[in-house]
Length: 448
Ligand code: GAP
Image (cartoon, rainbow, N blue to C red; front, top):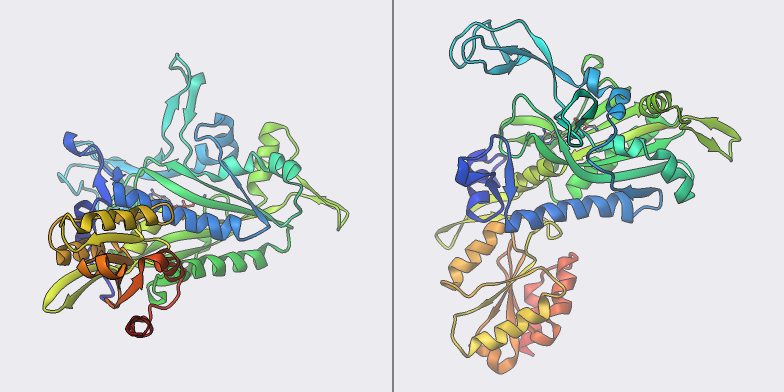
């Protein structure tokens, strides 16, 4: 597999196969906004589900939450986002384009060579107004992170969940940032989806928990098939820590444009709970019955982007190989992430094959995300499924009418086995859970 693939190839595959489309395309598009197509929406959902499963469902020390995108504007004053969530910008006096000051070399505009202004701080939050009157008092912000919804609900969750610390609260949802420099496809956009966990711990145990979560999150990507050599950890220097962070590690991925942040894992200390207590006037602490003491917990925060993870999974899975003298493009996606798990492909549109093929499809689709495709040659249909990473194709041929067996073809090895239709569901379920695709054994079964 190539260590790196061109971003253009990923963008083109995504468009061709219905993974990701440019937003508002028939109107000429909207900068940095993308729409997820029929395959993309499944892939994205699978990424979210894999995160939720590992963070919430497979643990008894994390609960979930879903808070509103629009929140009281006082939250953003308390969290420091109104004062500190800013980038220094310079503006061209001729074409009025704005540039990040730290990305500009020299004093002229890279586009038109016009003179640039001195740097000014620019807040990255989108403003809107709530209610019928647009005035200062009705200004609210679209959330730039889901984390604050968690902090302001800390007390609600603690009192209703009856759980002890350490306790995590997890949330997945949209965030909005008026980023100055976007680009690299879905890597940095102005609307994106966050997967965030605030893991509340006793002060003094925070460093240990930070190490724990850094490892957990690194391993999550590896378990889902990302090659270890394409991942690395980087600790933030003191000068680059966010205003709320005591310490922070980035999990970086080797994207086509180079090593870049995939996820951040920060130790936010008691910054947020203390700030919200101060600004809201409500006490936000925890009584530790075992220790017999009261304290403000520290928060360890693994914060990942759904879209950025989707991009890393796509890049890592992408491969071009030669099969029987022909080029095939394939996504070696982890089975749990693949948009379609099984494709039912009758050998042809022959009227004798269709009823049995439909019967097989109807049997499978309540349990697996299944596609039915009977257009064009079987070879071309295999290639289409390979391009979206479908792990298994089930072919119905004329022999199937006689022996009530079908062929399963596995995406990566291209191995094929023949199984009775009766056992197909059970068989696929085991293989999707990771059972080896042992072609020889099954062929042997068939020969008996
Ligand atoms: N609550 C902490 C926080 O938001 P961050 O490092 O700004 O930290 C965390 O963001 C993750 O969210 C990033 O590692 C990235 O995966 C994703 N992310 C942030 N800004 C993004 C953007 N503009 N477009 C896509 N993903 C973004």
